Length: 145
Image 1 (cartoon, rainbow, N blue to C red):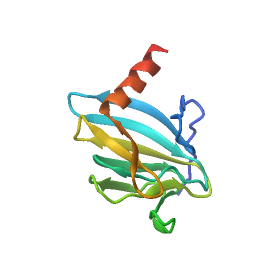
Image 2 (image 1 turned 90 degrees about the vertical axis):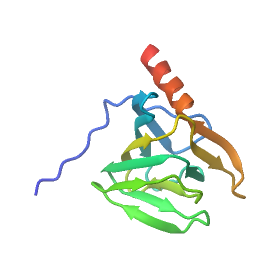
Image 3 (image 1 turned 120 degrees about the vertical axis):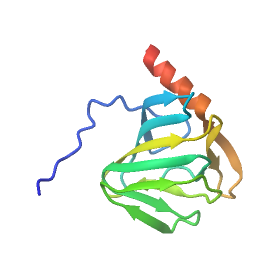
């Protein structure tokens, strides 16, 4: 079997202020159907902020290894390239990150026009949120640039 490398050099990666080790590229926002399709890239051997998903997420690992961590930092799950998962909204917080190389994942976030993610501090208090309106504003801003 031939192995191919995903070339993301032509993708206009952006970063969210205050969230380290995460890059994004929004592919589409359909507020009427309540769907956001976005590429996320987590840096190799790093973790993003503790958070929880408050909307349904469909995910396909395009490159690398997607690692999920418990709030205490212990490794919860490893998803290799090609892994497709469907994760319902959950109160359970976690961190995510890349393996030995940057991981690129297609996220299709579905089913809400409200909050999609809640960001937590180390004591698991909500310190921020991100939702449909936030994705729409970023998407519209990138299109206008």
